[in-house]
Length: 424
Ligand code: GLU
Image (cartoon, rainbow, N blue to C red; front, side):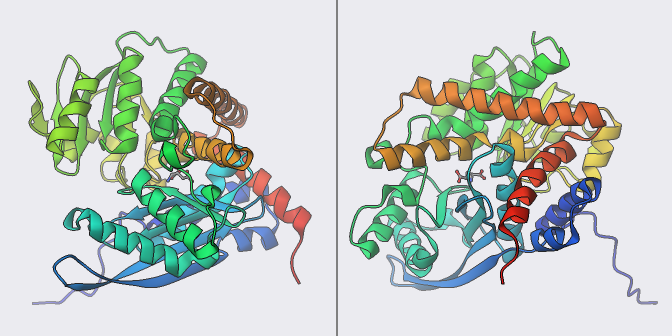
């Protein structure tokens, strides 16, 4: 039998390949100086650490942890930390690149970074998670700081994780430093509205898009992939805007209900049962089926590369609001664009989280406490402002919304780089 050595063509690029491709597309249109372009194609610094810890049963684990710093021309770096088996240097670096653009699209005074630990946190007890978080922080503490690098929650990390990081960093520095992380519990200087910010911000972008596109918001149907912190609050905001959330999913699979799910009740159910599966009067569907459902607005709120050139032709949504980071591959972007599907790109659509992180950081410096209403009002103002700026570029230049968002971000970042010059 003949042995074929030819590799099957790769349909899913790595996250970092996606990030570079997206940058290249925008840099070409902008005629970006080769010097800045070359710099932006690589991270400033990537730190890899080993995290040894002993679990409750006396087993020793040595996990791999990362923090990747893409760019700090506009200010200290900002970005979440995730705990997931899929974490790799490639993934955190792509996510760091996306943070640079996200902060620039929102005009926040930050650069981009991202971190992660390769692990399945569902296998660990709370004590285990505390130990590994503290050890990760200890290993990276010299690279953290309120004016250096400010982590935040991401996939499988939360307010408690941020409290441990803040505590460990503060002990090492001999005094309490609230501004070293955002997404903290309210009692430790967290901001009201931070927990809801990414999901709520995503729906603010959707509402603005509907207005700009002149679509009626009567009886709109919504599908949400992922029911973690981002997906659940996006679904809740959609529900409160009288949209019909017909399907949601989590890692175990999805549920569908033709006449719409009661999201507040579903959130209660998930708190008790740990999954959306089994919720009353619903049919089970797979995550793959969920993405291809007929609906008005599809909200991927899970991981990267969910919509690829394989399933993009089957997407029936009229709009995709990217609550996750990097859920659509560049190949798929082209197919969706040709099919007239309106996309709100991740660096704009899910920027509500980092925007309220910025509010939290400012409140920490000035010892202020904003009300929930104040946070949401300011978030809405900034989401609308950035949406309008991106939408205008895309309309004027007939570009994909992602490319328009990249042009805006890249203009801001490259102006900072140009002014700072190159050292030495
Ligand atoms: N992890 C979130 C993101 O991907 C938030 C980052 C932050 O608040 O710094 O945007």
